[in-house]
Length: 198
Image (cartoon, rainbow, N blue to C red; front, side, top):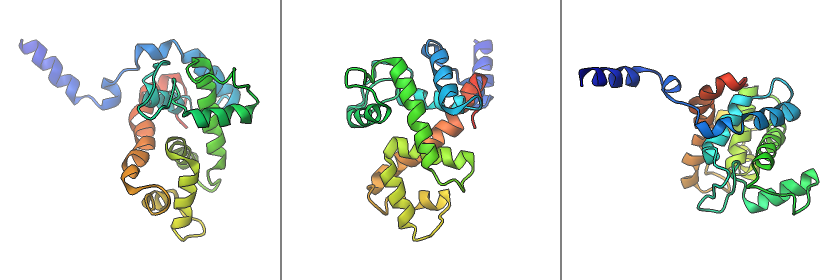
């Protein structure tokens, strides 16, 4: 009994990334994610961040459906999935959010699209923060919040502070601001062995 309590105490003293494990289900999709990430972003792809995002979105469950209708590993909403498929030239039949390969390619591609739209004056980490906020809550909301700052060149923290002052309802800000924080700070370190974070 004393040994069990000692082990429990020691495990609680370890930092979260050391205690946390990558879900076993993630291993089945690792190669697909790596291929998609390297094809879209190059060899320096932020694989750890992308894997952490899938972890956050669906816990690596291809059959996942959210309470609002988002589907698959990447939790694409039906409208976003249809838009993305049209953008990349896929037919409606080939637009398959529950297909793990489709979902991972779509997540990686959509993140790169959003990252590229983030202000180039920001560093890579802030641009990824913007991409993740946009993935979670819509690029239009982020852009409206940037305008709501009233500044010509707002910093990423200034835009974050404007959350809820434009089109997005203030009660949704905690989730939207917490989304990149959880992915970049809490979850990405778990996937450090998969590739770089940024």
